[in-house]
Amino acid sequence: MNFEAFKHMAAVSMEEICREIFAENQASIKIKKEAVAVKNLANIFDTALTLSNEKGFQSMSLRDLSRTSGLSMGALYSYFTSKEELLEMIQNQGRRLTRKVFTRQIDPTAPPDEMLRAAMRTHLYLTEIMQKWFYFSYMETKNLNKTQQKKSIEGELETEQVFIDILEKGVREKQFTVENPVLTASVIKAMLQDWYVKRWKYARRQISVEAYADFVIEFVEAALNINHDRL
Amino acid sequence: MNFEAFKHMAAVSMEEICREIFAENQASIKIKKEAVAVKNLANIFDTALTLSNEKGFQSMSLRDLSRTSGLSMGALYSYFTSKEELLEMIQNQGRRLTRKVFTRQIDPTAPPDEMLRAAMRTHLYLTEIMQKWFYFSYMETKNLNKTQQKKSIEGELETEQVFIDILEKGVREKQFTVENPVLTASVIKAMLQDWYVKRWKYARRQISVEAYADFVIEFVEAALNINHDRL
DNA sequence: CAAAAAATAGAACGATCGTTCGTTATTTTA
DNA sequence: TAAAATAACGAACGATCGTTCTATTTTTTG
Image (tube, rainbow over all chains, first blue to last red; front, side, top):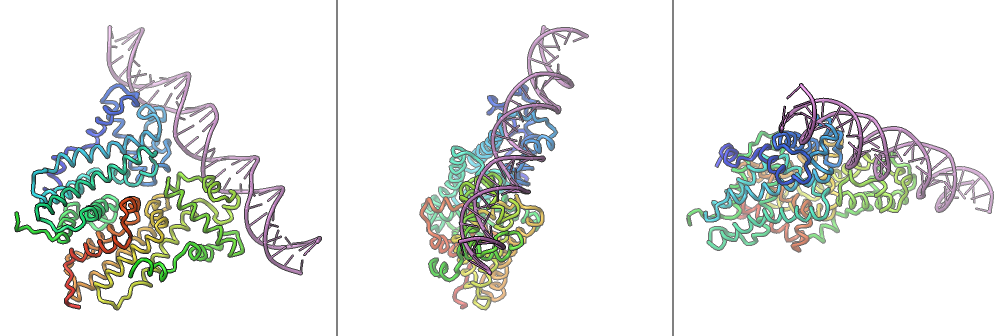
């Protein structure tokens, strides 16, 4: 599947996400009307992600956020109860989205090699669309409290488990040669994460997400010594 | 080469590093006597790295640093002129160390496959010894000013270039099959960096740096379709 | 179009930040 | 061991932080 098709199919947009956040956090959000809330939440999150990814969440003051978003300090506090909660909202949404897209896009009955390719492509395409969000989640885990940090770690291990399961399925069905599925899944994940963590590097070299996906898939398949003949 | 041998050979220690920092930054450091300076610098850097890696450099106040290190606020400012400079000192030292160890440990006349293995092992072993420093450098680039950020990017590309050169040498000497040396170097670097960025994960799974090195080397060699017979 | 409800504005508060500086303690020198 | 040099101390300063709260503006309702 190419990137454009995925983008259309996944249907993840800032507006869609903010509608979910609004529904999920009605307790903290003082705004009543969805239309107003969604519009401003999109503005707030987009601005917060941009500023945070430039100079870090802690270094972004709420006055920065106010100035850049155009909303007053008082208005901002109608959408979250504290700066910490703003951080948690972004992190929670990132996790929820990842889980949803992964379970929706990967067919568990497909042959393992196909599943592996689908998982890698889905990971790359999703993080390409939502680069700001994933980069933020990756870099700002430290600023979370212990409870939220634990959730973040669980999220990391959960997506890794997706790859472990696929690899083990491939071994069982004698399609892959994988001696250590856990470490293999680890390095695959590392390669996939590099795409959104070092986005600047690939942008500078004008490498598209599709080119990167093609490359990583081929690289991994060569390492796994995949036997396509068994299909 | 195993990890213990490398550790002994590389001879990088906190004291050694602080002596270098002292020599390099005599202009900013108000302390005259090396013995005093090195002792306290080691304390300051070690504490700063621990606190920063826990909750981020910006979130670490100089009062935190003072309390935990046992040095007064005034004393701290005898070792750096500003918090920003403290950050730069750590970053500069990390870069200098990487460059030095890399050029010292890799023999440019060795066969490419040997060079590749040496480069990967050196990277992993060095970042294992200096995990705190590399994790810090990786996570705190955003807090640097533009000039320092540029240096950080150059450093990243410089170590990547080491791998590109080795891969291209391997292709020229017909020992590797590498269609895209730049992307290949990129993903190799991503796998190597994962070791110190996700240190908690590997610690939890009780995977040693040697085990990880063995695995990554084997994984990469399988992907590159290395022909050992040509040696 | 007036009253009620919803949303925004921005000054004010106490806490904490990085940084400075006059003083005190420690070490070296002669 | 007294004088000089070096190092450490910690209270104080102004700036800025997250947060609150009342006043004002905008939108909806009847």
